[in-house]
Image (cartoon, one colour):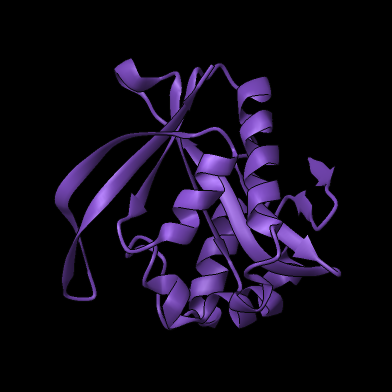
Length: 170
């Protein structure tokens, strides 16, 4: 899959994205806003591990955000099983040099549309750290609605925070 947008391209991951992935992902400011499975520092081993999981995915749910032929971020969603089979969690990050340009707002819109069109989903949701208002704005601009606050549900780098839950329903 490849979606050409005004500010970026959303496409599948490739092994040749490794150098740019490391350059953009190896940032404490990004690591501070995502789950611990996103390592810091982000090195060769981390990139190899990630790319071995996503390159050639049969059901594409993980994508890179490309600007000027460089992989500068990631966006994807995880489908859930059991009674949650029609629900998926969306997640994303973007290299710091690309912040504030509307790239992620555009990418979330595209991947949200793709997820609903390509999978039997009726709900996409995101859990946002309470100290990340930029991510809240990205979701709100894309029609995600605030569903609730999970108080003191996240501990990241020794700080315990609330998680804000947003969802888009079709």
